Image (tube, rainbow, N blue to C red; front, side):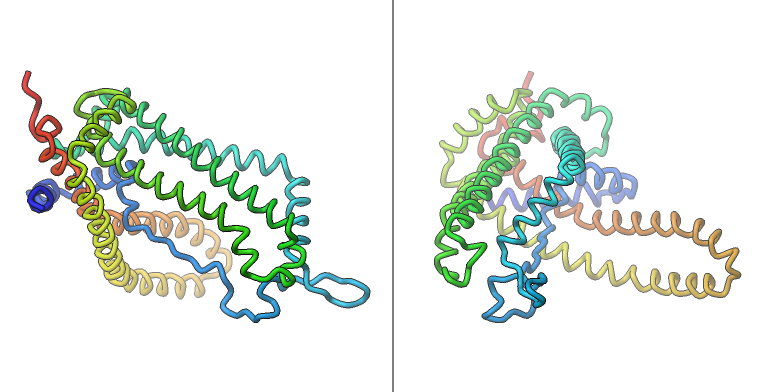
Length: 356
């Protein structure tokens, strides 16, 4: 545990140095933007939604409450009927859907490309205690594009496996009549029919999680130090992991615990900051609404046109400010990986230049 304890203590010290010695608001704003573009601000985002309705009964658990007219009476639609209705609507608007999907995919590609480049910008900002964008963005073009290629291939494989599992699962459910007559099969048979495909997705999530963890915490550090591509860096990182397997497993669980702790800490701070900022916003918003309601109708449109962009700007600034609250956690989590790698192999101590 010595390497892990030393890594944590050194990371806390360096995080304090980068962000608070001295405190520089401009540096925080720029570094927060770099961390956000690098995807380092997502460790606190745990979006959990409940897909099930609040009220359900045993008789309607497999049926949609939507009704259709049959013989003068209303009958509930089966899941299969709803499925074919959706399929028909998709077929009618296939061009529009293809355009939307294409635009979304292009946006994802662009954001992934930027995230790959900014990953190394953020890395250098921490190592050099700086908040520059232009110079490191150009400097790390080669390794950034290599990392982007990995992200693109990894994401493509993930989407294909998920889509294939969903497709074959849906075909299986159609074949056994789970969508047309689910009540005759029972919940147990339907679950068992879906288990192989759900198992495939869970298996890939586990494998993909390990690959992503190794890539982000070790491979990119090797890429930064050696200036090499992803495949070469993967081989060197794999050899390092093989020689320090026990420490790597401990670090994996340590990083998971630290990430969860940072997420909880960020959530609590964000709630406090949100409540603290919401009070003046609500008061000012109420006063402006009262002023708006007292204005003549002709002036309300002008007032609204002036106030709307101002309000949107204030909301964006406040939202970005609350997000920057996570910056110490993001810097700390990234620094832990750097300090741990430095203790495994002195060659990958990025805080010390390589000898000429």
